[in-house]
View 1: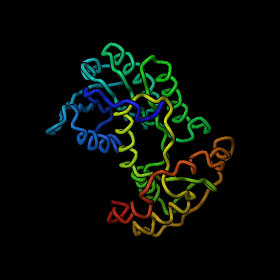
View 2: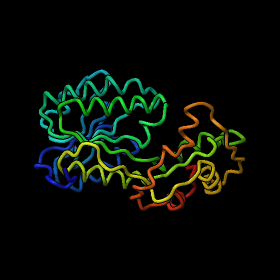
View 3: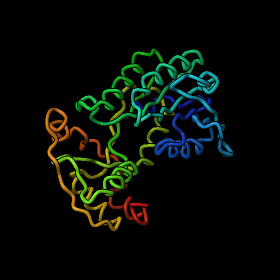
View 4: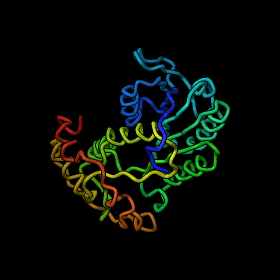
Amino acid sequence: MSDDAIRNDGGTILVTGATGVLGREVLARARRTGLPVRAMTRRTELPDDPGVTWVTADLKTGAGVDEALDGVTTVVHCASDVRHPKNDIPGWHHLLDSARRAGVGHIVNISIVGIDRIPYRYYRIKLEGERLLASSGIPWTNLRATQFPELLNAGFRALSKLPVVLVPTKTACQPVDQGEVAERLVALALAAPSGQATEMGGPTVYTADELARTWCRAAGKKRWVVPVRIPGKLGASFRSGALTTPKHATGVRTWEEYLAGKSGAAG
């Protein structure tokens, strides 16, 4: 079924994880659709945000999720607990249970390129979330994207606190602008549920050490960048190119353009 076969019927779009790196970008683009937009957050102090209805709900416990989904037609699911990824699975159960009760007609999920080929705990949990969605009985669309520049920036900023920046050796990465991914997610939300959507990657494939060196130069950090060979199946999967999708390099904004726009990448 084509991504553009049927458009959203005019109902409310709910964005989970609306205060996160991707969620903020999705929310900005959802506003432009002219449809009613609702934003979910765990925070009890809600933003004063004209044009968006903010709601407090906790996917981990399920508190407030039924109320947040009441009257919602489409969910764009951006929420994920990277620090405590095990919380994502109960979060999925609460989201799907509430979505069934509310009669939600479409859930659009963001996922990560390579999660089915890389034996990394967080990726395994993301893959389990995909499986729960696909077997939920709710019409769905799942988009896998490569690495967001904003998250790479945060990672390199943390790593650069040491005298050397350690990165996995011979590991290819393909940064894709989070705003461009948000644009794609909203387009998918407006269209008919399409199941597994075509992957999305940035315009250029780099090695991890190339990304680290350009980041250090942009941030004015004089650090040695040291590639480290990660052993076992995890390291082999990194070196296999599993984090990239060169055939689907539909992103436009480059890593260099992102760094140039940061006015100091470490900021």
